[in-house]
Image (cartoon, rainbow, N blue to C red; front, side, top):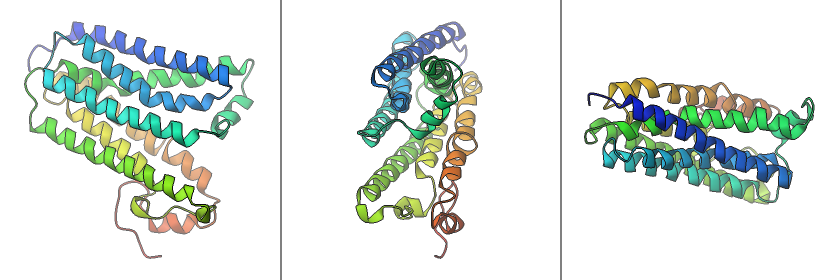
Length: 267
């Protein structure tokens, strides 16, 4: 536990930044070619996977092998599932209205503005939020009960997110539900099962660093930032603002938890 390898970890930070940047630049090139910047959302999960794999390679002489393989696998499973889900959801659709509205106000070249305000910003966020994935690679000693608690919390979050996404996809695929509010399954327990799932995933991954106080101290910013993004930033707050005028949404919001799951109230 003692003697956290700060030098090796600092080098890993540089490799991770390069990996996140490479994913975003390749995605930007594809977006310019296709004229669709919405694909940057697919790159979000891929970016974390790339950082995890690069960190696994960079930490070859450091840390506990079981923990290193574990944190890499958990990150890749979460990131690739999310990327595939977003890619399927966006297939056949045009530009995301969020990006269309933002780029309509771009001063000067739209693509250059998108590179600065979307791709480079998301690359920086991938690097920052992935700090537990990087730091866990350098924690020595076998996994403890705290590590396995983190795996359990990750599993709860990943399962909650995947099930919620699948339920919503099936609901939207039925023409009978067009214009209706999804209030079934996990969506009756929380208005944002996917965001709650992300919340659990990143606090779970953070627990994998907690056998080394130094790794935990440098990593705690990650779940804190992710929690703020999900509840106060580009997640829950913006989505609910968009949904506020939908028929039936106010009643749904009144009987359903805004984030942490709880049994639904009476209709």
